[in-house]
Length: 136
Picture (spheres, helix red, strand yellow):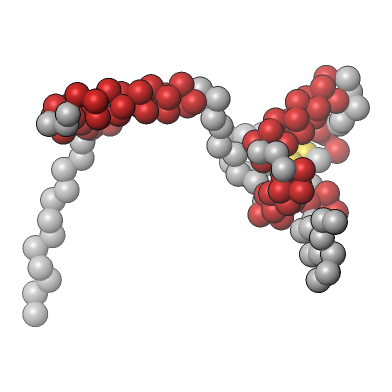
């Protein structure tokens, strides 16, 4: 049995795709009542304003869990815990309290010269609480 004829996929430039998405959004918004259009516009502006404050980094799952548990325990947003930790780290780095050289190992990536390798005890998984232990 012969193989089915392969389909040709069209590749769209990201700028063109964004333009088409914007036009499609305008068309769908035009059909909405004025109050809903205004509400959507406010929501979009809010999302756009937050975008500047957002960042994405790869973190080990054990570290993410530690952050989540600490934020839960302190009843504050996890992003604020991370903001404090990063600010303190950058201050310590500037004051030479932290030496990145001790964590560096050569990278095989053409983009980076070094990777940082962390000792397991620095990033170990949090210990699970025993039953019956909790906040009083």
